Length: 549
Image (cartoon, rainbow, N blue to C red; front, side, top):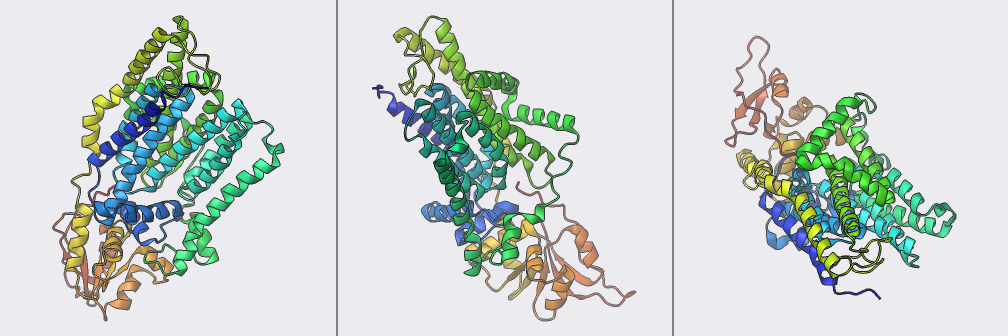
């Protein structure tokens, strides 16, 4: 029977890292509303609506629950931001569990979890509402389940296959959150076959996995047509129709954003190296060696993760839509795991060469209190155990030190804690508009307006017509919307400056300067007089808004 004296520490290490990660994210947290997709993901989950393609039902469902559980924390926008901080904490804690599974060393695993929390992209993403942070936490959870299945399968546990079925169900949850999950499928296939070459002959297990995957995915995506049919306040597209459902789920509007995927590979590799350097600093130079050491000692895990990293980075380097740095969350986790696993393996090698004996039997507590991975040798004596703990602490410190030293500069760069631009602008805009107004807006400014009208219940008399609404409701061009409403209701515009210039040829626009310095409102005063007698426009030059990524 293995000793259990290390179990309290085993539980405390992930909790400690998770708490630190949450505090770090809370320190830079966006205090309220955001623009762009952030505004949408603050507005849609609290009202249980449907988001832009692919609908993000997993995130919407979790966000709806979080908006209830976290209600004492403040208004819905802050709750959704706090959810990202919780998800970053979850990912960091699961990183500790993962590295400890693979190395048996809690101290090294603790260092890996802290490194993830301090790395700029994850730290920043923990500060505002976004489903990519959920993707990061789910990737970490999937790695824990797959590695757990491998360990138990090799140990001959009769319950090992439950971990694989759980992995399949979790993969379905991930598909309900982000289509980046599809890129993980080849690596999972390689890993499963490497662990169990005869897996396809085990028909019952395969059927259970397929059923868990498809059942979970289907159940989650039913949220889209059901909530659309129920008349949810915010619904993207027409997911309650057959064509509309597949339009959203398959993200048809983003087709064509993958540009020249096999071209200019040299530049793409160079760009990835720059990203690695910006995220890891001097540790980036150790990543190739960490992968090689992981590949030698933990080959199946290396096969799984290098496939994930390669496919995801290839896709992100060729994708031209949105803030692509979010797509590197999974690769950051993988690289951090390699560094942690390599550090644990170095401890194992050095202690063994120093004559300290083995590191501990399978399932037994490791030299620093964590469970030892399969295939590890037996427990060292007391002196060797202390030496292993000391060496693990040194390597963990070396992992964390560069990021810790850079933390003040990183925090200053990603700090959103005083950013109230979206709240200030949307509050001003709604207060400025006349009763029963129509505002023709575009995405980045529509989302904070949706939040105030649909979540906070402000100005129910105002109709927001986003470009998506024009398409879904067949309202035609901006000019068509103006023409249909200008004689019956006040009409306001929030449009990009280039489009305003075009609209001025047909309409007299009165600019209402924005005191927040972001984006003015334009009130449509009426049609332009006949050619040659055009009234002067009251437009002003306003610099483009700086959007929250």
